[in-house]
Length: 300
Image 1: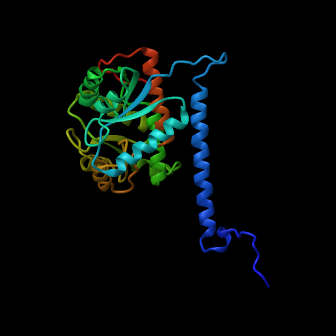
Image 2: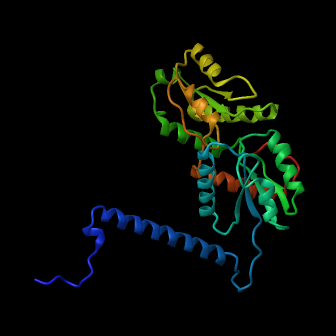
Image 3: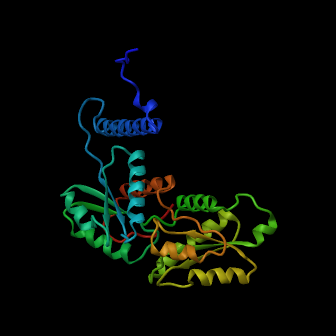
């Protein structure tokens, strides 16, 4: 019997072939999605009469920067979610320190174009009031600076989702509720307005969960996370969860999680609500014509 000259489907004859076929299909789907997104982006700049609309101001996400490689990968994942929601919007990333590209380099690449800088920071503080506005003012680009991400209800949505992922029960008995509490672990700042913003977030989360939420800090402010855990235990709250009020994983979030007597949630990360919040701050800034002056308390 002669061998057939018909080509065989290697994905069905080689071990692991089905996996190779699936991987190929996945990569093809990703490529098609990217092409569709880019095409939609180009078409959105053309009006019905065929004339070209002006491009929207670029969105520049301003990250703090971290030596932990997980932080950069998380921010990049968040950027992809933002691009999926707004394909026609040019999105860039600039860091205050530790990671490239640094913010001044990102702004320099924009030339004299328009840009809105959205800090990936959760409260007011030195970076929001000084570092970012100074970099914006020194750039040739025409810039506006958005308020920090917090406080805002979309952050509460994300914090709640991360707690549920970690094991927080959406329904609990009254006895369990009376013995439960949350420590909202934040980075910390010497700026008193940063503490105001964090306390507001803790208040909103407490209203959502129906249990006490105590803000605590990894550095520069009090109380510390272990102290807050002990304070809740002294009130009979022995089932204490740590809500990680960090945009991405890093040293501070890891140290805070290690202090959890019960469960510790993951940082906010690339949750879909975070992408919506970034775009909300962008749109809010354009609507209110914010200048490069230090932003006021973030509103809902």
